[in-house]
Image (tube, helix red, strand yellow):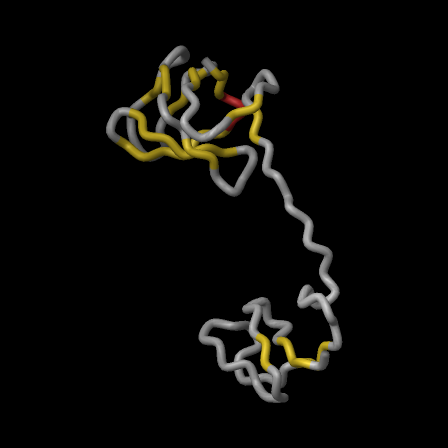
Length: 119
């Protein structure tokens, strides 16, 4: 089945030859390329990447876990220092396996997993 796809990363496709009109696409207003794939994956193997986030000891972390700081961490741009042993509750995983989002002392922070230990 012949169709046309945009190679700009927007995922645009069309049954007719034309240009990509997607706002913000790297190839906006450029011609789409012909594709003859039958599976709709356009030559890309669909690989489900599972992000594994581990603490300083290698324990796997999940959303909502509680962790403890293993080192005194100064907050950049302020005189605040979060002391070793401070408990952080309800962490949220990010797209980066080396960082987690959390709330600590009323502030939203991103902490490096190398300074955390799961409780």
